Length: 239
Image 1 (tube, rainbow, N blue to C red):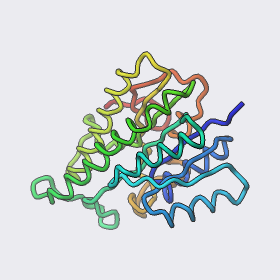
Image 2: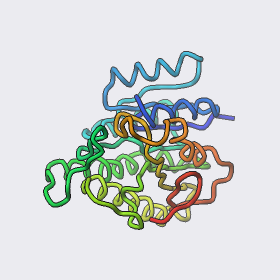
Image 3: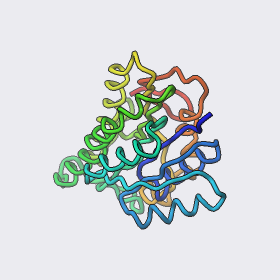
Image 4: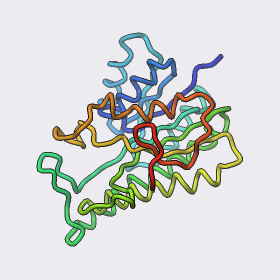
């Protein structure tokens, strides 16, 4: 039986790197991707020390041409994809050291637009680029790494571009899941919590091992039935 094949974006460090590590530990064949080829290859080599099955592909959400190249590599090497973890993203408005996000009353509109483009639009575009390969899987799963900062129930202040981008990413999850309802593809969003990473900063509440638990749960859960849901701590939460 072929190993399940997982692709993780933004995986040269932080949450993405830990997701790759734990998926490998669960016996999957993993494709680690990042926008920086040198850093991505170094990260893959770190995980390859144990002889695990891991590859590096370059995917840069600012460069959609890399989506097509990754798809072609996948087609040639594997001709399918079982799990897509959309982890890559940016936050140009939050200072993790000062715990301050830029005010919505005086934003940098270039930052807002870039954040929405990368976190929402490009993630959707990459997902659609890889959809033909996901459609070939008998048990495909797409996991959007979102945030409670995009959750309407607990909406706060500041970081308006990031909040819009993650709320939009949840819309992507919901709409896609409905359009894929009669397929074998399950599509969910995850809030990992506030995690100690370069983006989350040193004041964050969770270490990265705990932050990825729900992502790994959705990726490995036998006979996954849930789709179009938003999860945190392996429990469904409100949008």
